[in-house]
View (cartoon, rainbow, N blue to C red):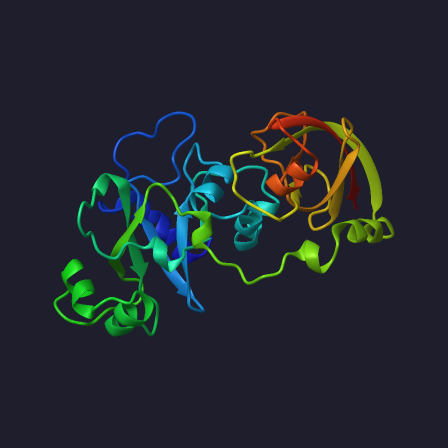
Length: 287
């Protein structure tokens, strides 16, 4: 873990404004509450939050809260591809759309429904750049909110810039200019080509998918053994439908051993799945 990430973890756990109040409830925990804070950084014009994983967080709850597809969450956090489960204390990199940041309280603002957002000042930043260029706000708004006596800021300084709703980020607030890999390079063709390079294995078991997800048009899978980046073939023996999906990571250790594969909603619907768990047959590749 880098020095900056260690510093962020220390802020979350020790500084009064970042400290958690009360004990975490058992079981599933909301990804973000009014007691939490988000720290933002900016890379190439894109704002990223450092999400601190807590006990009870899951890949699905985090990705759904931030309006991300699971594949996007893995893309921004490559460490998740080989991890069997989320570990409390992990910092996840989450892209944040501009419209998800509430810059002013305004009328009917309820602090119980929002978590504060802080910006981590980077080398070369000045108050004008942070306020006007990054957050499109008057400099005096940032100055008053943070009780600054002048316009001087320094690298590593934490500036309160706004709030984010604890109800999450709607998926349609995000725009994507990328063309889906499956449209550029059919997954079935990739599966046939992988046959020439890797050893094919067959298995069967239970397929799980998240019916509540609003992801569309992306075919991916989580598997315990398949080569990450390869393509897996999944068959629904009830209707003999076959779907091909790219393996993007491992099945979390919290799932039952009989879960053979986790599919994206688009892939599961292609198999005409109705229940969140159903029996499937798989063909996949190992090194």
